[in-house]
Amino acid sequence: MTSKQTPQAGESKDYTIVNKAVEAKDFTVNKAVEAKDFTVNTAGEYKDFTVNKAVEAKDFTVNKAVEAKDLTVNKAGEYKDFTVNKAGEAMDFTVNKAVEAKDFTVNKAGEAMDFTVNKAGEYKDFTVNKAVEAKDFTVNKAGEAKDLTVNKAVEAKDFTVNKAGEAKDFTVNKAGEAKDYTMNIGNAN
Image (tube, rainbow, N blue to C red; front, side, top):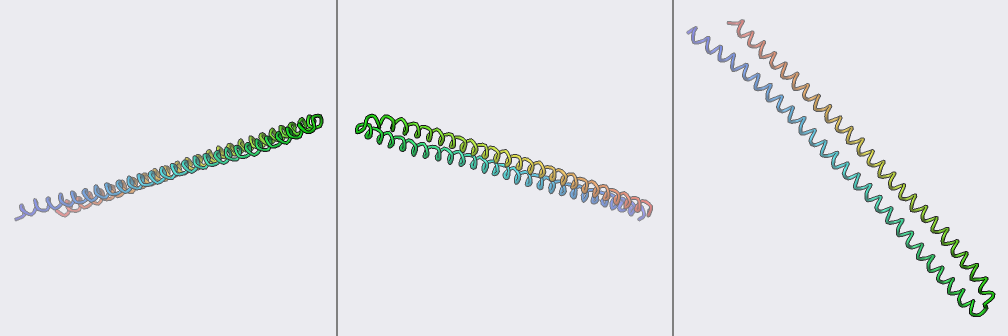
């Protein structure tokens, strides 16, 4: 009967070691899957965030450019109409009073031209300023999105490293327990 008990004790000891090893392996695999899933989810979230911020910056830039263009076109139309009206007034006046109309027309044409040139300069400056603002806004938002993405990637890496360390420590502890258990069974015989 003693010879039969020894193989059973050996089988029990092998079974315990195998169970401890399987537990350690399963725990390590679960921690690795958790770390992988967390990293994939975090990367996806911040990729989407970065894309959304880039779209917002693009839309803002396009809207500002359209506003500046529309404003410039409207003002050019107003000043064209103003110039046409003044030219018509000058022509009618010239028919009635040739000498006075010549001086009047020269003065009004000069005023209209100066006014149009000044306004065109103002709206050119306005358009340039809006374009610079849009560019600066886009660059700023892209920098913020890049910084956020980098920070989240570092967090995800640190989380993964931490989880891998926990899994390693758990595996080492389980292996130590299995060894101690095996040694205790061997000493008991």
